[in-house]
Image 1: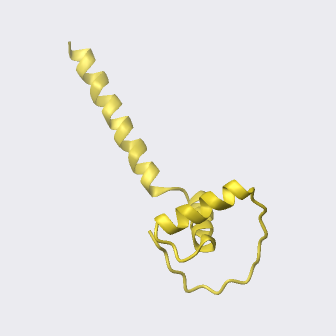
Image 2 (image 1 turned 90 degrees about the vertical axis):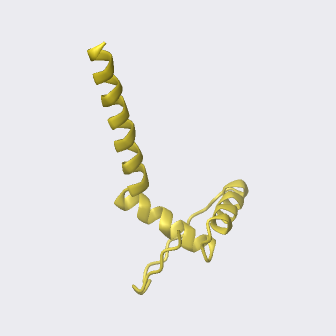
Length: 76
């Protein structure tokens, strides 16, 4: 799940988190193999800005399943 980037980072953004949110970010970053909580947050921001491919695929599968069930119900 790690994503490397070769682009130079030139912007700095400060975000205040509750202690619990900070703990969860640190835990998620570690569990998912990110180099740091900052790397995890950068990936999360990219996902929000550019969409989430894994969710799009899940949505397509759910929609296809609903269509299939609808067709099966119509033929009964």
